[in-house]
Length: 314
Image 1 (cartoon, rainbow, N blue to C red):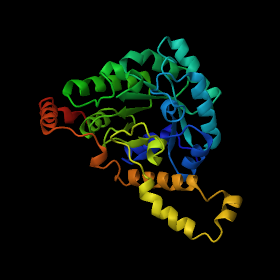
Image 2: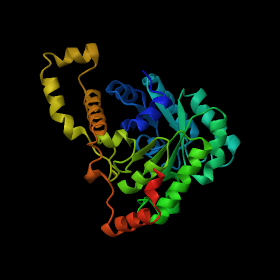
Image 3: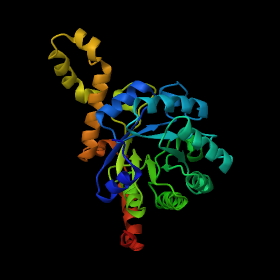
Image 4: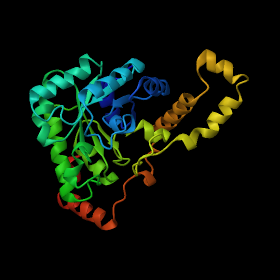
């Protein structure tokens, strides 16, 4: 059964982790749904891992709609989020609402995601006012990465954390129902999660948030250009399981013909299930998949929290 926004909010209150994954096509959307994923993001990262662009910036709305349509066809019982690409919302509220509506009406998505905080407050509010659920995206925002001097970790200083907090509060005020944090140490993710009473999810934002997002192609080891520090390939974890599974089948050819259960999609499903299991049991992300922070940086943040009586806000 498809999860609802109320369900996601309930999971935060109950301190239970949720899982989501990117998907960009019909077969992997089906696979993610069979594995039991809570939510799918049709990310503009598909422009890189699926379409071969060097960054997410060239991705167009028309391309995103094609990807999103294929995903919702494959996973019609899963909550699907359409990722608004660069240029689809920044120019005006009217353009933002128009393109958000395309995800809902043309691609049958359940919500949209867009990058930015205070600078997109009016766009987020306009989309929400039009009846479309919105997820915000803060921290390392790939569409505007050049603003930060490239793909750099955020939230390692007090000023950076304060800035992200202001943006998170602005998104909540605008009506966003959840926020995705990207590329920051666990401490920064923890501060924001405890400060904002809507679901806070992470992709490389440590283990103290309300759920994890992973790129499908990183999980499966399909994308060779680079793999972020926080991304784990789960294929080595399930290759023995797949070998035992396929070895136990008397006639793999017959299973392939009758059930199509003899190939890489089965291994991918096993990998996604392993990812879900590790997130739900708080095994992922382990420390090796979290961004490091120096003892000096951590002490400075902790002194600030103590001096400001910060934790009394929780």
